[in-house]
Length: 306
Image (cartoon, rainbow, N blue to C red; front, side):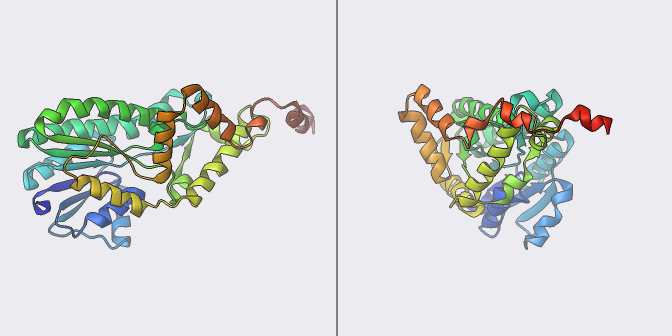
């Protein structure tokens, strides 16, 4: 019964996480909503407050002490987590050459290492109950990669591989593992994309080799998100439906474009698939070296003499 199950959502103060939180509150589930401490006021602003069945707790998923504190409280008061929804995530926009090691680790820490650690910590209780649900919000970026999103896609590809292995590993205990895969969603998510030091400079300096990559991809992605029929609420409905399914599949496409890309990967030969997607990139013929573009730049040496 829903009233006997405890759901924990990470990154629940915005986007898909917030929409899922609002959909779950009042359904009978015991819900633990988590977010970074600085984001907690967003819950009250959206009309979500603590109650008998709702708890709001600070959780930076990259901090071991905060992970342990939230899960220890859930175990003590509600018998552990029955449904873990890994939603917290960040996205860096940068080509491979513009991602330094610390930035790459920051991306992987939030999107891959932390959700996998959350899973590791809840599994003993789920195994003891011989039941449990693990839902992780993946992305179309976990089935296909786009230029300027290499580190993000790497984190989602890693999630996909780890969850596929996990699906086999915990099935004997009745634990169900699902990757929910949204594509482009009409939200403000594209405004929260992070830039590395090098990618930010490249986007703003005309002479940078990857300048055209950034100035074309950024508005292209923003346009696709604004045009999408999918919203955080529609993805949240997919999440709720998946929780309630008796035998949810490993992968659940959550938007129409996710279904289309999944189909393309299955039916289109790989060489043609990559050629097709490359041709679809915005103004791709302008990418890379351009003597004409560079010739229009002011002479920096002359500028320095003035």
